[in-house]
Length: 202
Image (cartoon, rainbow, N blue to C red; front, side, top):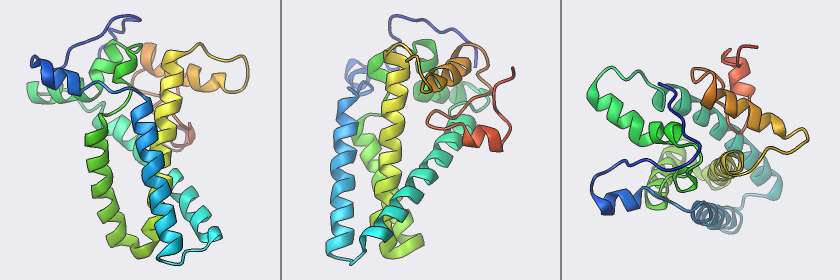
């Protein structure tokens, strides 16, 4: 992906003004939506399926870790897939390329809520099929992992880096945007970059 990043302005994804409007999302909307959904899932798991607090906590943490893996895979292999055809180039630009071109555009740092909730519903049935009633603890962790990713990603692009340990997140993701787009795919954690050897070159 060519580095054409602009630190101001915005890009256009669709010519249709309605579709274009639907691609923009205020960061608070998915954070609220997934917090509410996750709370409901945990309550249901405890009240209707008898999952105890320890089980819910362990499942929640497992779900968060699983999300970081999915985040890495999607960022590396889907959002940065080779643009070998015009159709692929359009898909990459729509999903992620517009963000690389305009990384400071705050309205393009989250997936539209209706789409993300639809995908979450599909994950619910996938996890329900795979793990049965444990989904009521695992999926909330997965969804809040996504919410955590959104918040960290938003802070990186919207605010100046802090003068403490957390500056690492700004530096790591900044290298991906401005220096080495083929590396540093992890946003919430560098664990998978370490595992799959995609940490930035020194």
